[in-house]
Image 1 (tube, rainbow, N blue to C red):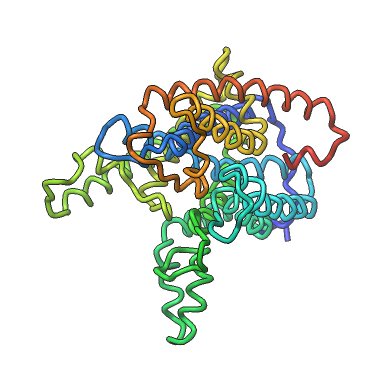
Image 2 (image 1 turned 180 degrees about the horizontal axis):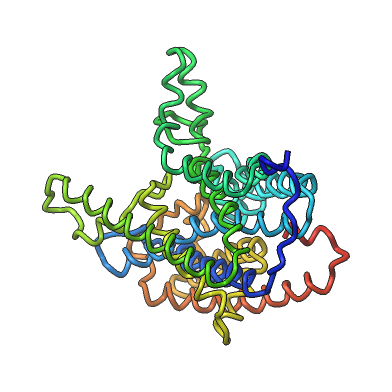
Length: 393
């Protein structure tokens, strides 16, 4: 059994705080960037566009979903070492994963919309996806981490084959099965009315499995770990640039097309393409050596967020939504809650959309407030180990 990774992984000799710190710091950075995008949602500005300011405001946040999912897999690996029991880890993954699914369609949906009316809008977002990926990881963890990581990379690389799965069924069955399959991978079928699937399961389950396998690299000696992180990260960046450039060079010219660099950076997120994942995960992996030795106020600041990711996520949507209502009341004399009944697909009349200076001013204020709230919660959680339920938040 041990030969295929079914035996508990032994506790490594080197479990210094630097290793955990690198994950917490980068995860904290990812979460800070995520706030930019969600403030943008409530500002009414479109997700990208010909204006460089709006384009890069959206582009910089592309690192969030990729990094969040990848390092969730790494955290599963590290938590498994701490538990020392595969069975306990499976129970944790199943219960926490299903909790995330429930939170997405209840608390998180309410924070997005401030509406309890499910007849017009249901969102299956990033937390829903993370929840189901954690449920699937309950099977992946029985493999050796390296094997799980390789399987995850194969899922990412060959994700387009998942779009063809409904086609193997006979005609009468395709539509009904395809409606369900749209939750797994987009295949061109319609889902149930008012159900909005923002994040499908594939390729994200592969990204999480790859992050789980990456956890083994964090157990290596510092010099080897740095070399591997730089090699993997920079290789992903080079592959992205080379393959992306070749694809763009073969396209027929369009006078209205974005400039070359913006085309290269404008990769498909829904579902996340191979180039999108190379573009976003490469730099994050390459940053690990820098993050593991980081000191000073910035690393401490980011680490606070990285230690309580789910709590941060819940609080940041609630605060941004409330802030948007305050801004609207201040500027227009009305909170205009009706604009946010289908958030994050917010539709605001162009004359009422915020400019980038206001967007970033609200972002800075939100981060400052979130830091105070998350620091309090992290301290409370650390000081109350007897409250077992806190590990789920």
